[in-house]
Length: 279
Image (cartoon, rainbow, N blue to C red; front, side):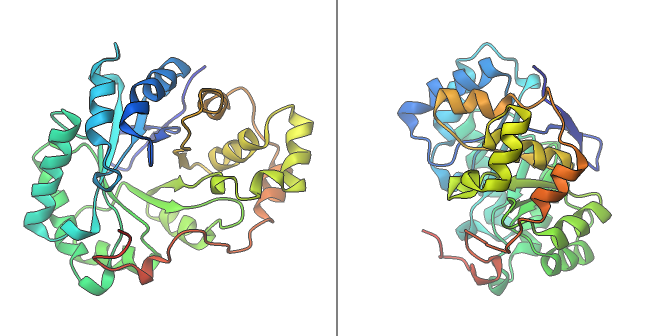
């Protein structure tokens, strides 16, 4: 079993499938990470806000996988935006994880009303130029956020991590990112199973391919050249979510899943998130 690799716009390789560790408790992390590594995962997505960077770092340290085989992503939380605080909290994340560098560091939300994401990103550029981060990017940025960012900074983001699933495919953002060679990472790629995996279109396609509905949806994402970070702490699902490299969906099936879009956002609208929100 292999993991496809996406080449970011600076030439740095990023695994197409990673494990999201949001809400994975410290006491569960070691077993989750061991299961994931055994299944073939090499990319792990955390954030300062998740409160489990130390547990992830410890679990990875106890594994027998070399650092250069891993791809570790973390994120700057809203409350710590601003140039100096970005550098301070990047270093805290690095220390929590017990690492010398991060593969990817992202601004968690634009928080546009606070007008700090530009200087936060300039701090990321500085850290990138110092070699402390191999790739930089953003999360939850809409087109207008990206346009402003790219106008006022030097480095085009390598990644934009956004909520994306068949019921909310953000095709306009995807098209913009494709046009500017920004890789899209889908968070909540399975919509946290809020009915999506019971959709008759998904279940019918799954039956025809002899795959699970989750595998069909994840393969649909890969068919659109996205990176995905499904979260699970159940060993069976961790393995199942990675076991998607032995088939491709026919273009007609991809199109049928595309047609399920309902613009049904599950998380917060980025335009409505400010510093101090989402505690």
